Length: 234
Image (cartoon, rainbow, N blue to C red; front, side):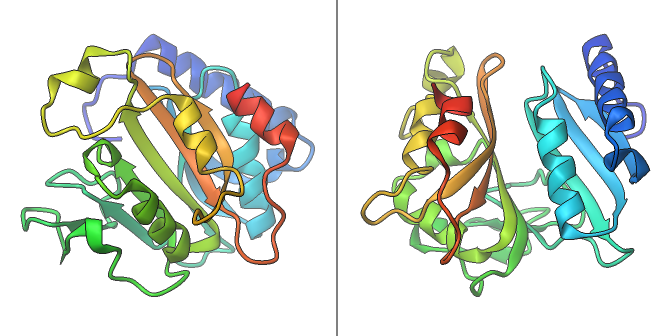
């Protein structure tokens, strides 16, 4: 969190709730993890002992009531920070160490590429991909989601925020080419012809925006169950 940033009472309360949940958890109480909340997004930093423990942290925090998304910079056994791409970022990246990707060169963009044509990265390259207020500008959404799936590692996460179709922000910008509802993301969490499926980690629409954290279902992995889909979409 930036120095001097204002923290709302709601965010402070959410951070306390998260700490209480982790403290009460038999295994996760031992994790060396820092918790901060900004705009209902939980930010986790620190160290975990394994990828399994990191995933358990993601899931436990995402289920705390009021948490819209879980963004983490957790390392495993003191290793490297996650490899992060921030697509369509413009001059604002969500993580300072992320690789910014956009079709126009500006501050914060390291890779200039037309994302309608795909992602210029090898398979299973990234631990996390951020798409913050970008997907609503994409014409070839299915193609881009398939590319995000391809580039993410099996335990990787797509963090996306889009405007809710019912809010004025969805129609106020003439460069938006589509509307979103939480059910839009259910399409990408089922086995569909021509679609590489994801598993929902978190899907929330607390106000004017929809927040989603999705994990790719890679070859040999089980797709999201009916109960998983029901938790977020029914």
